[in-house]
Picture: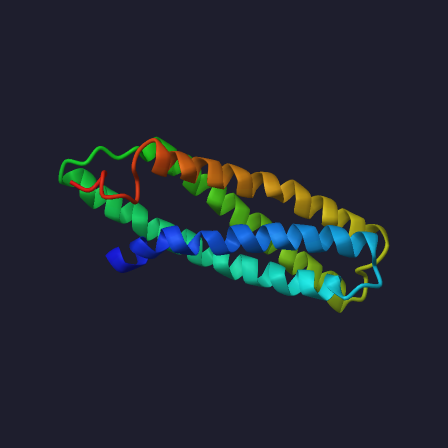
Length: 153
């Protein structure tokens, strides 16, 4: 458990980078529909969802480790952890739904016209979730020392 929890700080950067790249590719492919970026956006979105799942799973392990540390006397900011976890879960589900919706539209050959613009807008709106997840995660590190030697009992 401690091994997976220890991977969380490294793993979280993949979904952040991939989702931001996906948003950019989705917007560009909506503006330039004949480009190959639409296919790339779909692949990046799939990788983003997989990496977000890994981030959520390692984050859950980190929370369980924090619970053990609390039993040993560490002061754990579970309120902030809960907000971070909530935004991370929303982010994962939001982009997973976008992924499966986009796959459905591509398979049914409906991914064109206004739906491209809608996908770009939805991708951009989801950026708020990734921002809030990172904001709460940053508070955990900067303000509370979570993931650092400062917090260990």
